[in-house]
Amino acid sequence: MKTLLLIRHAKSSWNDFSIQDFDRPLNDRGKRDAPMMAQRIREKGLKPDALLASPAKRARKTAEIFAEELDYPRTKIDWIQELYLATPSVFSQVISRVNDEHDFVAVFSHNNGLTDFANQLTNVRIDNIPTCGIFAVKIPITRWSQFPEAEKEFWFFDYPKNR
Image (cartoon, rainbow, N blue to C red; front, side, top):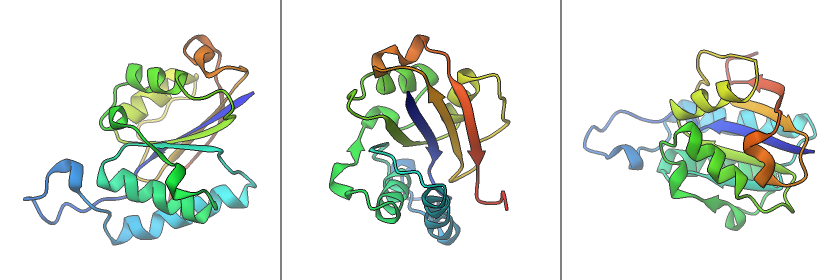
């Protein structure tokens, strides 16, 4: 059994329009929400054994905050350029290449692709994964290469305002 968390980056700043999209930082709300959501994961007794993230500044910082809260070495985060504004097919390709030694993977990325991908995985439909939202599935496979064709089981959906 493999487990996958799809995590949208925390809320980012739009204050400086001279900053390129890739370089937008987290705003104050994002800096509050990311540790809170990581703590919710920790409270569930969950600890991913691999973190994959878009290298865009807002996704990078979100992944680093989760790593810190979950005692995951920041140096082991796998920065994957393809996860920046990925399409559902790109998500599937990236996930199918994960090393099979990892059973519990968290992927940090962006909308609209993240919500579109989540909606393709199970019969659970959501309008939008909000910033710092988490969509989780379980997959009855032994190898990540089996991911694209495998049946996915919805596990949970959580987001900062869900309390």
